[in-house]
Image 1 (cartoon, rainbow, N blue to C red):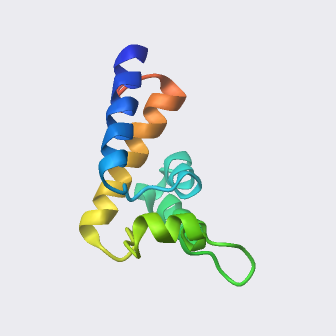
Image 2: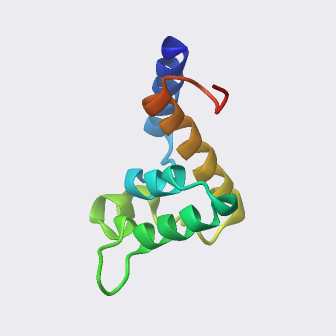
Amino acid sequence: DARTALRELLRLREQGLLEPLPFLARAGWLLYADDSEGRSKGWHAARKQWHGDERAWGEATTPAAQLALRGHDPFSDGALAQRFRELTQTIFDAVIAGRVGSAP
């Protein structure tokens, strides 16, 4: 399982070298870590991390993220939202649990 997870992470790395992936680690973790209430609580926390507010910086407001993502926002585009969810699940399942997919 761990080798399969590592292969999946390497596949995502290769894909990320070809195109920007709509994923930022802190926002992704907030979504992954709190999947209660149908992910609405985690989704809200991830959106706040992505955009920031008057008291906290937004992960997507950094120059590197702005350059890479070129304004693509998974919180305002349904297809990107789904891709962000998929990437979050894949990446953190692999890193945290050493597996691909949510199955135990």
